[in-house]
Amino acid sequence: MSEFAPQSRPQTGPKIKLDGVHKRFGDNIVLDGIDLEVQTGESVVIIGGSGTGKSVTLKCILGLLTPEKGTIEIDGESVVGISGDERDRINGKFGMLFQSAALFDSMSNLDNVAFGLTEGKGMDPEAATEIALEKLRQVGLGENVARMSPAELSVGMKKRVGLARAIAIEPEIIFFDEPTTGLDPVMGDVINDLIVQCVRKVGATTMTITHDMASARKIADRIAMLYKGKLIWTGPTDEIDTCGEDHVEQFVHGRVEGPIQMELRRL
Amino acid sequence: MSADRIPGMLRANPLRPIGSAFLRFLEATGQLTTFTVLSVSHFFRPPIYLRLIGRQMIDVGYYSLPVVGLTTLFSGMVIALQSFTGATRISSEGALLTVTSVVVLSITRELSPVLAGLMVSGRVGAAMAAEIGTMRVTEQIDALTTLSTNPYKYLVVPRIIAGLAMLPLLVFVGDVIGIFGGYIIGVLKLDFNAATYIQKTWDFIEFLDIFSGLVKAAVFGFVVTLMGCYMGYHSTGGAQGVGAATTNAVVSAAVLILILNYFISQMFFGV
Image (cartoon, rainbow over all chains, first blue to last red):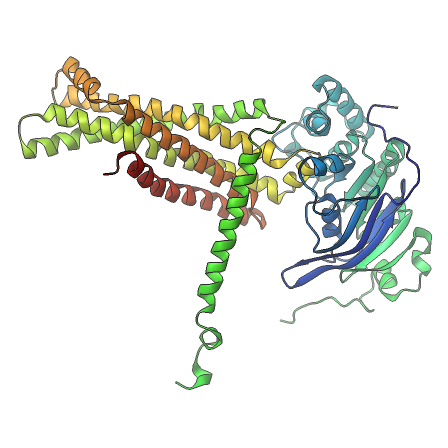
């Protein structure tokens, strides 16, 4: 087991717990009382349309946004409002693959992957480089790509570098923000497979937000649907087609008719 | 005028736009103050990224030398010309003393720090706002946070320290080049004796002339880098937002430099 492999912990409670989380921007209520528990080692996927608050949920957990009401706990520790070294310590448990990969364009891909090890964990650069190359190999990228800059890569390759960066510190929790958006179906499936393989290897708890149902079915142990700031359904992946919830069924089958009405402005 | 012909905004409340603008101003002031306090509070708390500070120092100092050198050189030259014209209009005697004194005072106390501040604002402040702004809108700053790296420590502090340290050095070099510009015109065009010109300049210059300019330079270096980082850090809305942040960084730094220049001059030399 490597230095950063997750330690086995007693199962005393959920890994992530959200209780009555509210977040608004001006008059726009984005999260309207979210309750969610994610157990250690579980893979939860949050589905929902654009603008329903999926990314905001992740950002609240990471401390990038502060909810107005409600509590968020990581390993039983309340994290709303913490900052500085405390926040850095909590965020040391996380890895994240951003929708746009968010690679640092002033660095090579190798330095991007090694960044969390050298800057976040204070690891020796040579050792960090070795680990970064290994993580890049795990996502199917060689040394030639490692020496390139992010600007030289396709969207799919950027996502793979982003995935390598997310798993490099072998985090306890990994967030995936729309991992397959903007990819062709084959590359989307490659990313899904890599996520499943890499997460299994690291043994992490994961939360993924997506509106790609193929991706959700492949990655998730449990799926939750977010609609108008509330979680309207949560259940095992294999029950989603027979859950009997109208909003979920409309979303899963991509139908125009149903309770979810798109707010289109008439010309 | 009947009530239904009054424009909607005025009918609602004519003071509303003024109040709204004032509230926005207060909000921006509070946000800038918080940003400044947070940035300065991270100056002495580890980790301190010496490699990044060094890189920023080279960018702010070394790469700004040509533009600062050129502006101060030609400013010194034009001041020598104009002060000679002014001196000969008053009296044909004592033109050398007037030229050397005006060149020394205007370059060291005012022009070198102000011009260096404005040039660095256009060259470095704009680049900082654009780079940090792009990192903001492409979620790279969020990525830093998730990788347990404080964006203030990693992005802001090295840039502000570089501005604080390098602007005084640039201004000192600018002082020398600006006075040399006056010397070129004095000797080659106005036919003053070279040794006498240097002697008069040396006799006239005082420590406080140089020191006040260096204090201004440190303040301007802080302002330029702070505004560049602040505008970039709070940019929103994609490419257009980054463009606006870049413009705002340069304009706000330039205005602050000119305002602060008066007050620092008043502090050192006020009567």
